Image 1: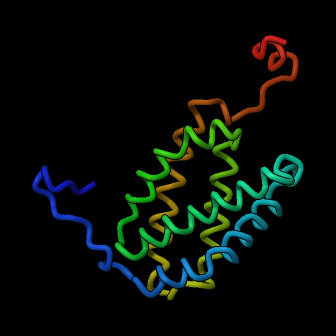
Image 2 (image 1 turned 180 degrees about the vertical axis):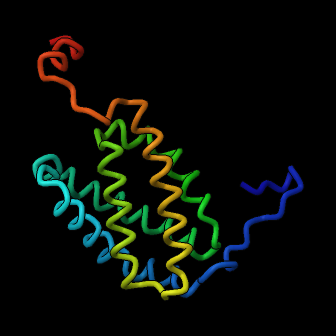
Length: 160
């Protein structure tokens, strides 16, 4: 991250493809719905885990993710979304959203973004999404998302 006190250049918000970034922001709700639909198609239990207000909260979160993706595309700075992903992991942990679900959401965003951005900007979109997925994959191993806990052990650890 650039920081003026360190003598680094500030990030140019127009170094990438601002037109594609604006298209992402304009179509963010449709892109978010397509990404959530992709996750629901890939994971049969998704609709059971996210219904009602949890799904509405997830829609708002995906809206924020699309805005961050647009910032990364506009500046051609994929590390920006990786830094953002590092900051929001605890928030998603508190909401009981698994890193696997976030990884699938990012894959859904990759597929949905092709309808909004210029073909030349897809390299920037792919790089930003890959950076976010790398963060979620790393955090997946920390909290045990890799495997589901046995129900009896889960009850013991919860203190039931």
